Length: 478
Image 1 (cartoon, rainbow, N blue to C red):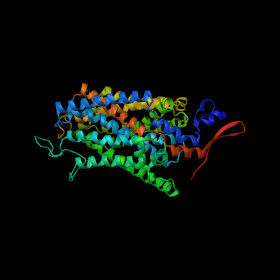
Image 2: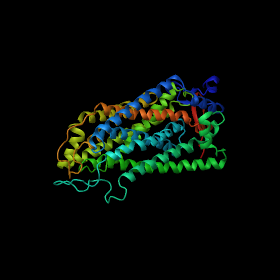
Image 3: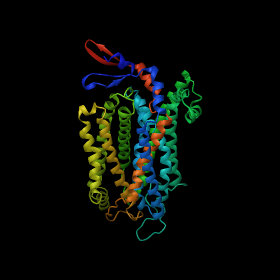
Image 4: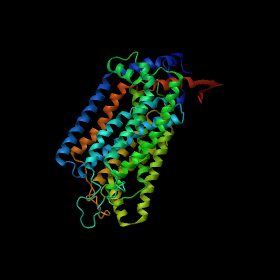
């Protein structure tokens, strides 16, 4: 058993390979300790904010130079902007779902990651703004200049072209998704904000009063919160799948003449789940190692999540094989051109990098048991998977936006690859920077640890001994 001093400060439990696997914070100290960490602004945090702000400024400069030099009349120059937006949306859009999904399973190990995942809802608001330039760059559905065998209406998701399609319905999808994720964050953080009002000052005190002034912690309110989180989580899951289907179909598949594939949307969603969980594990590792949360985050969340990450890695590879073998076996000339364009000719190096970082390296890391049981192994595999996802999105959207004539009946030739210029690189760095900036600022507005869930967890689990062994004892609340 851990010493009394370790127990007082929430020290880790376990021996040998399981050392530090489980932690048990002192319930009476959690609120004060997490609030103090939330309100503090140490030098490394300021440095991270500064770096994120510089990257964001680079992205803004690259965006305005791209807009002033190329305008929005042709989608080609915006291919890499679409790629980095898709990457940001893919990763951050799935993150709040991780919290909702693991709440459904009632697993105890997920408690430290719930708020870490929910804070990415704030990035969803930024995604709405970042999405607008893509709407401006998208070619119209109706061909303004029909020539030869060109189609009068571009192949899109909108068969009957309803009123407002595609712009109104696309933007409403992103607004609805962001609203749902923010509601999950608000409802989950309300008990913590209500408790933090006593110690908060200035803007935080006013914010917590406005958002959580109605919360008194009655049994009825807890029941309503529980039901609300369940309903919002289920709705967010359905809405996320729908919006991802709309986005990948509208901004990738419909931009390549004759690209018709039922496997691409689910493959995109599976990669979204893989990378969303990966990013959460990376943030948790940083919080545990350098953020002072080692007494709240044991190794158990990394160990448990690594198994899910391994499954998602294999599932993404299955979908990729299903997509590739269908087109390869069909042997139609247009399908062969699409395979050559996206996989085997101009973007072959990027595709190989995508495979290496999305499957081979994460798979090799995650099948190693000692690495899965560590606190650094799963985040390392997640970081590698994020690189693979970035390559996937840049390759897919840069290729889709640069096919040339989007009104062709079929892709008649294999276009040349279009590589990023200096302004594309600035835009890519800016896309990464704005995610970090928004998240770091949000973590200082809302507690990055779900205090009420961690407290609840201390009531349901403890370490006990049986004969000479030490075991984790879990209680089931329902």
